[in-house]
Length: 324
Image 1 (cartoon, rainbow, N blue to C red):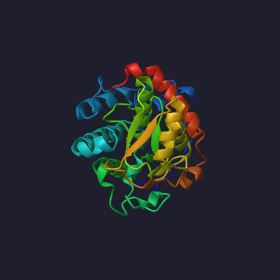
Image 2: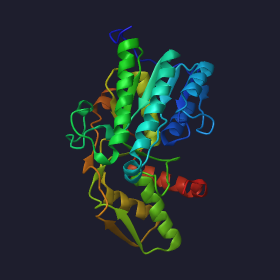
Image 3: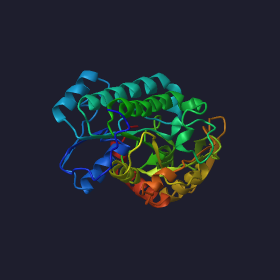
Image 4: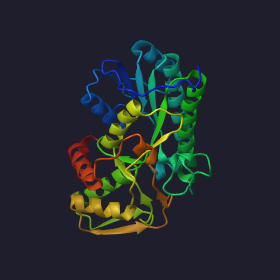
């Protein structure tokens, strides 16, 4: 079979088995919520304590038993600048193994439709803004997360190779910076937005009069609520087919300083905010071109401030259960 054999996207069978790898994470849990709301009756997920996706034999056994028709690969080892800079081997090795195992098992099981989730960090550090899909592999990566980016690029190419060699209509989506319920709010491993929520909320709780954030606050970032991302995933599975990855974002960006000010306001923090300019900023701007997604008929619905309000409320309700 070859990629020239055309596939026409259509509504997915609500009674078919749907496996969500990483179903308890930020994106995976949102995808499960979206699938349940859409009426899918047989959603399968395994927690990391039940299934180590780095264990190839265990992954193949799972696919042999479950025999899913559809798969979303949302499982990944993720982290912010500090974690990516400190543990590049872990981010490269763990993610490549997870991807290879799941994608190989899905191919052997003839999974009809699969969506691989990557990251916007796959694009070159100095890519033209907003970043188009065809910017992939046209320049050097941002050094602070290049190992993670290489792993995700490998996943995109793996999906493309499956399309060419086996003719399976698998696709890839590249989300912008995501946030929402079930995010990682740990002090050492979180991304910028959950880290800011925790930092400012703790400052309110302890009566602190100053908060110090990394960098200058000037980098511009695009943010998308996980529930929007989940909605986009189902939409792409039912409306898009093609070898090129699809950017998923809101199409707008804000500075880190603006995000910090908004979060401080939402949690009720009235103290001083300082910026440690000895710490890295990362890429100056990262905004995705989402025209391909718009052509497929989807755009984001959750306003940033509304999404942040919901996320702060969720964090405060679950803070006692979160990783430190």
